[in-house]
Image (cartoon, rainbow, N blue to C red; front, side):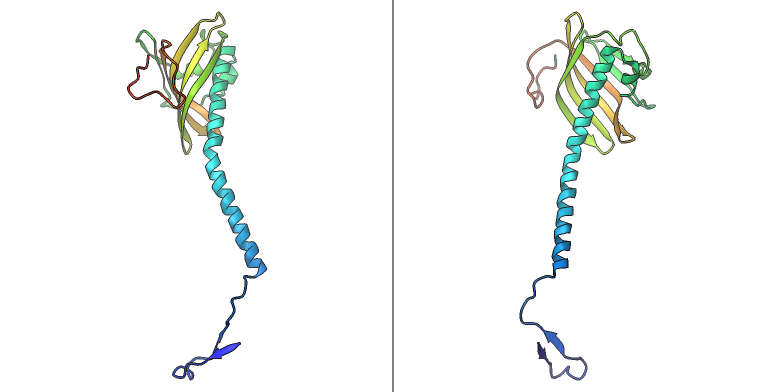
Length: 192
């Protein structure tokens, strides 16, 4: 070890050791740095994958909600919903009528539930913001007799006890017009 002394400070400061070679970090420091880097990468990846997990869970919920409605599974359908005082269900018919459906009908048997058929949802656009989400999608419904109807739908969701639930929706029935691009409609394109 080389000791340096500064003549004017020699009386007030002890000699300071100086090392000429840089020592490699100790094994424990290297291990700690690797662990911190590993943790940082995993937290970053977990944060990035959360919206994908939410999106998949939301799509699954919407598919289940459509299926339980058509199957007449009242309990299964009600489990997809969590009604709030502000819940609202609005429907615009293809002939221009606007219907304000009581949200409580989503939780109980009604004449329109259980009519059979199938639904195919497509063109999902999902936005998750914390414990709320909104989703727009297109739906093609087919009755058990083969009659098809088409709609644009906007769904409002909330995360309740770590599960996504529907809180409201707006359905706009339409005539089939065209094949829509996977990433949404062109600006100014007709909706019908």
